[in-house]
Amino acid sequence: MDYVLTATGLSKHYRRFKALSGLSIHVPRGAIYGLVGKNGAGKTTLIRLICGLQAPTAGQYAIYGIPHTDRAIVTARRRMGAVVETPSIYLDLSAEDNLKMQYRTLGLPSFAGIPELLKLVGLSDSDRKKAKNFSLGMRQRLGIAVALAGDPDFLVLDEPVNGLDPQGIIEIRELILKLNRERQITVLISSHILDELSRLATHYGFLDHGTMVKELSAKELEESCRKCTRVEVSSITALTQVLDEEGISYTILSDTTADLYEKINVTHLALALSRRGCEIRSMEERDESLESFYVNLLGGGRS
Amino acid sequence: MTTLLSSMCFRLRRSKSFWCLAAFEGIVGVAFPILNYRNNRRYLQEIPLDSNSFAFVTLMVVLSAVLVGLFLGTEYSDGTIRNKIIVGNRRRQIYLSNLGAAYLGSLFLCACFLAPYLAVGIPLLGFYQLGVGAILLNLLTAAVLMLALVSIYTAFTMLNQNKAIVVAVCILLGFAILMVGSYIYAALTAPEFLDGISVDQATGVLQQEVIPNPRYLRGAMREVYQFFYDFLPGGQAIQLSSLEVASPWRLMAYSLVITLASGAVGICCFRRKDLK
Image 1 (cartoon, rainbow over the protein chains, first blue to last red):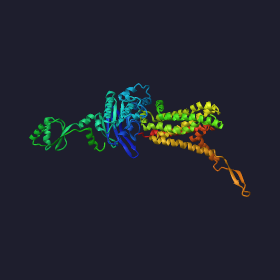
Image 2: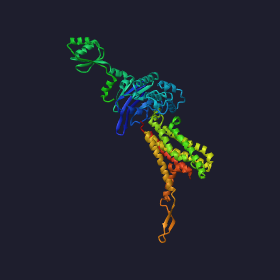
Image 3: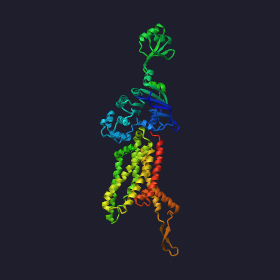
Image 4: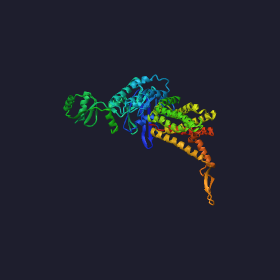
């Protein structure tokens, strides 16, 4: 697989505090990679490292296959854009002037792309209004526009919907999806709002205590989170016989419990089990979400 | 690096605080020759154009601190310095472009004083009594001194991420630079002898006598004070503002040493700095 970002054994220590400890990550090209973890898990530290704001204590990461220790990493970074924590914008400048600043920083010869960029993020009508008078959502969108100024292939967004109202969240979500689908931009996104992340991400990385606990695709997550019916019976043998006969897929959890992964006819199942002398003790529908997967994986707590 | 410098100069042009400082310099530049002209007429004095024409140097010790603190401090307070690093600019380039933009801004502020001073002063007070060559040499010395001052403030600003602290400390540093310069100047200009009065014990008659000043600097101590008067920006600013620069080339060399030292320390620390 072609990866935009890879890291192995990445560590970052602040004196005695280990923010990252031997972390590894693999962000495939074209993915929307959701970074999930509790506060202090190391999400922002990881983003700071890959953005070059801080240097790792140990380990290595590579952007487009170029190791961070290589001087050519500069060229790889040219293909990157990021919004780390708060949007990095000049508050005393207008949206257009902020973009002009970034265009000049990038050495772009013309400002011709600015109106299109403003339109893309929905700030065309901001006129000469200064960024300090923008709403949080507008600032966030301007931050993304600044990150997009260099026409990057890889966008890093740290908590982009934090503090936004529902409308702002929807706008940012649609913008990210649009960038990913229409411009094929790979997005690395960290968020506390798991429900929101589950609407976007094609891949997930679960961080805890500075290490990557699990990386999986949305498809794999869906498979492990798929809807099921948990059934508790008096005889698991009788249940498996009936399920095999009916061709229903299942997972046995204990001597009395199993998860059934297809829609079942309860009456039919109950009669079939009854004929084998087996009784149903309980039956409940389970719909495991990203949140419950996260809780199961990392043990819950404050996210 | 030119692209970074260009973007910083663009922001400087859009900065309100920069234009406020420029307006202040301009007002002071106009006020000095008018006041001198009024005093010349009222008290029949002959204050020349030369006097106060380099007053901007002492002003700039503090104003450049305000400029650097506000202008470069915003890079951290608004978080925009991250945009430059993320897209692959090297930290050394970012540091030098910030230094360059702040220096160009400081030179512009100097011009904002001098242009109106000369425009108003020449018709009212006449031309410089000092030769044009000497004035230009002093201007060059002042320009190099500005570089040293901006370099010191830039090093401090680039290594601290709190804008409020940076601005406050830069201003205090500016005043401290001037105070140290003034102290050394006062020590060096202390008279060697003082007029004293003694009473003749036999006749009871008062006698005037000249007594040695205990605070007068002699020998090696005087040389040390003289060195720091020439070396430190505060001492240089006082010499320039009174147009009493004995050896401008030496002063420029000292300013360049300060610029290089503060720049090297600043770049070295900034390259290793963890940014948030």
